[in-house]
Figure 1 (cartoon, each protein chain N blue to C red):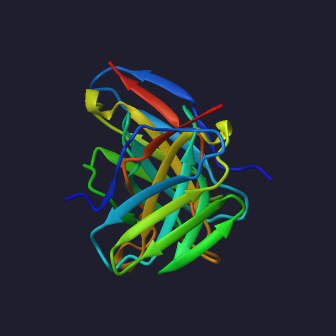
Figure 2: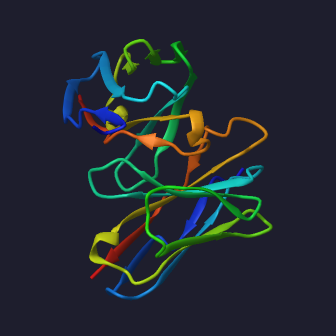
Length: 114
Length: 112
């Protein structure tokens, strides 16, 4: 049973560029959440997608946007990158038919903005 | 005030010790409490999941929630070097729906 997968593993971008990160949820899960984890900090909630719609959003600017596809996979897009966007970006999946707060995380994508 | 406060440590204990990790939270609306373990350069791994107050035990791990004092604890018995990781507490519920709010994480090292 494949867990949550994310790609790419690492990414280096320049300020002002745009980036797209990808996530495939755990088998049987229909909900995807994205988190940003700065070094030495706990993950911070960016947004959550269910049925291809953004269901809830954290305190992140509109530069952060996402999408969920019919197969439940998801993308996180960040525009106009800032140095402060350098972090580990985590995708977590869950199932609305079981415990929505029981979220399983992928290995993350480490984004470095120079 | 942060929604979830967690002492970042670091905490260093000898192998076999009992480890106590703690968090406090400010919003009593939250009902679901989680502990995650995160190894270096990996994603968080769900360890324990509890609802409302009380204890939950899973092998060497016990999670405890005291809603009256807004206190969350994780106890690790017979700690092993493989338990060395960052431990993150989190809560959810109320109007936050699927959003998890995490503490800063406590770095634990268990030395042989």
